[in-house]
Image (tube, rainbow, N blue to C red; front, side):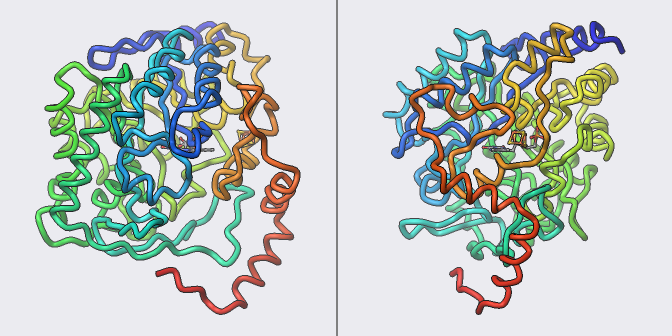
Length: 429
Ligand SMILES: Cc1cc2nc3c(=O)[nH]c(=O)nc-3n(C[C@H](O)[C@H](O)[C@H](O)COP(=O)(O)O)c2cc1C
Ligand code: SF4
């Protein structure tokens, strides 16, 4: 395909329920928005998103949010943008207006609970489908990311029927607030070992009640949440889910199994499925260093075969030709990018304007991820503007920057790992 052909394929508008997105390039959700300490949208949150909207993406998905007080008290990456009280709606509306004015649509990613990945504060009680902790990166970590000594999360309680109902109610209330703030749609986060994800695969779901066992039972909690959200927001407001396409773990569920579960959820009122690779236990696959791995594994293709023509958002395919070919072949409907749009906020304008030689490429060295995982303000060494799109935004200090460098150094991390493994085990619960 020529550059003009690629631009054409990625420039075709995409309809999602009542909303038309002007092209097929999407800013994926990222917890890099630097809200205020009490969870409000900041000027930096808006400036970051507005910059990517001006850079030509058709849709912005707002990540790093919480939909409930529970989510606020257990989020692994804080502070987050809050959707759990009406008082946050005016600030959320300011964000929506800015993205709209810059020419893009905007969806909110909704996180009612972090489940197996929760970090409990203020006496929070973690719940998931089954009492299974996460062994972080059990099957490998992304390039240049290390967890000295390894990390196993606290064991969550098995969610009771009341817990499931409470989390569903929070999901619905947050979706209502998103609509009230003017968002164009919502995406329920059900991937990466978070609450709803723990139901979807037999690897994490060992229940014997109506929420465990068959694909239909494992779909039930999320299907009910989608149905209740649909009832609350009406037939025309886009609702999607973000799910893993493959556990990439020994004994885990593959794309056929995940697609079968999602096929039980779709009739409840789904308008799109945002595809995510693997989870925290197989995180190296989740954040890959080459473009198009999901396609190479055949996962979007399997979802398409299992789900028909529901819009599918492809991840981690910054190579414009691969993304255009995948869309032209019908394997996916849009290319959703995360790190590439940190490195180059004008990627979409450049691809759609057939100016490929001007793209600043993400190098996949993952210092952004190391910052996220250690709660240091995210920055990108390929784009000095990233993280201070609002020039008044605070930057990481020199010590923090040195720490992030050291945390990506293989030799230092080998020493740290050996030392950590010699120390007595720390209680986590
Ligand atoms: C700094 C950073 C923050 C992220 N925060 C979120 C988030 O809030 N929600 C989410 O679903 N994914 C989050 N992700 C994962 C990305 O959306 C994406 O799935 C992953 O980076 C792989 O896509 P990529 O190859 O385009 O970077 C984050 C990734 C990074 C690098
Ligand atoms: S820091 Fe920038 S260049 Fe490096 S992986 Fe992250 S987005 Fe890519």
